[in-house]
Length: 351
Image 1 (cartoon, rainbow, N blue to C red):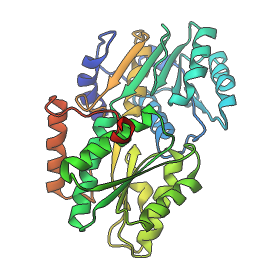
Image 2 (image 1 turned 120 degrees about the horizontal axis):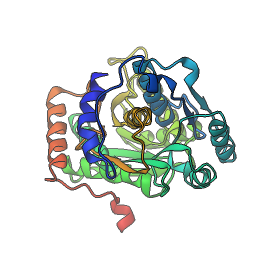
Image 3 (image 1 turned 60 degrees about the vertical axis):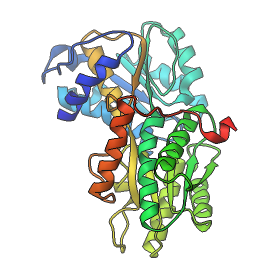
């Protein structure tokens, strides 16, 4: 919980619509004990080892901290976008004080849902719906991706390799921010390093992710960074399979620390995950739940950036040297201090 408090003290200063008390409700607080929180997943599922799972973990962390009864938090999984409105409606009718929708795929559904249930408090993660009952959490993904780009370039240089790759779940502006930051981080270390970019046809296609990763590795890509949700799990599997066979390849996780997901047997290291670009969706869920409990919820937009530690790399990075971590942190400080401006648009789009 200490990490939540430390981040919260900084994060609330960036909130664009309202200042709030950063103290944590004590266990057994009557208001906190009464709130009910529901989450609807996108098609990636609750155990996508990425976005949905990270958001749910933030809800569970809050519930554990304040002692919410188990039945006060619940999630509904969506198998297609046709499930979004029915699932959101079910949670509202079940009396949830806060309904959470993680992912830009909910944008159309949230617009309708917010209008149909104007008294329902909603946390919408990764896009913006302008409604008084919607709190939007957005992230500076390009800033965090810059840092893992630095890591990819440093690791590649050590191995004498000159090609890295990026796999996105869909080719549009939000995911392009990951690509853009990664590209700039790589080029900051190695201006001549080659970047291969591939986009999948969705975020719930692990087989496609594995195929794309296999093709990249076959073409000499040494480190892949994925921003592809469940599709990226297939890319992680390909990296693990190859490392188990003795091949020296790496992959970078996204949204949460995916080190555990990259673990394999029989190699010289524990995990195929070089590092991960963390988006603090868990913190967004925690903070918003706390605001609801305190009666301080308001609609508006909250940006989590590198400056307030809303994005970044894990505290522990077993596959990075201390020297590399120091270099990455130096770049992070420069970005946070506005000495380096990370462009959210990749060069291929500009061209």
